[in-house]
Length: 194
Image 1 (cartoon, rainbow, N blue to C red):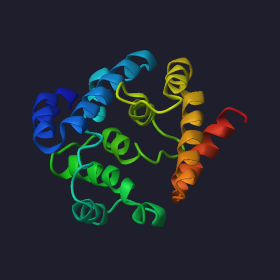
Image 2 (image 1 turned 180 degrees about the vertical axis):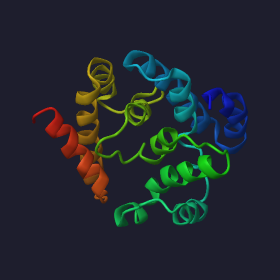
Image 3 (image 1 turned 60 degrees about the vertical axis):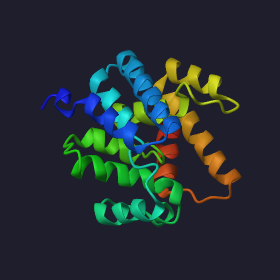
């Protein structure tokens, strides 16, 4: 089934009506970044754009609604994810696009599901959405320009650097690190021989 079946314009209308202006603009920025990265790294640009566009589809639902979708999803969710509200939107979003929007492409679903926590053995599309979210035009954290250089230089090095950044950030906030994030870090560390 062609990705055009999913009609990005229709989804933009939904997002514009259901997200704040700031979150909507972030979604557009991530989608645009996904398209550029897909073109650079040999992924389908339309599919990448679509996945990036919808990555935060459930971000502004109430915590109660997000958690209900997480529990209803049937996805494997670790304890650390269940105990960390800021991670629910990704799981809820993957379930939402599958059940409400009728998206059947597992790569798009997983790209949304793992865009916050990552995992070992991510597909190219999953990597693109994960990294695009981290370097989109609206991002202004301290080393964002350095991260952008990593992303456009070598995808595997960028993934390892992104996992380092994510883990340090969670530790600084005294949060919990999901097992899939640790496994993702270890995967890319081994891949690069660190």
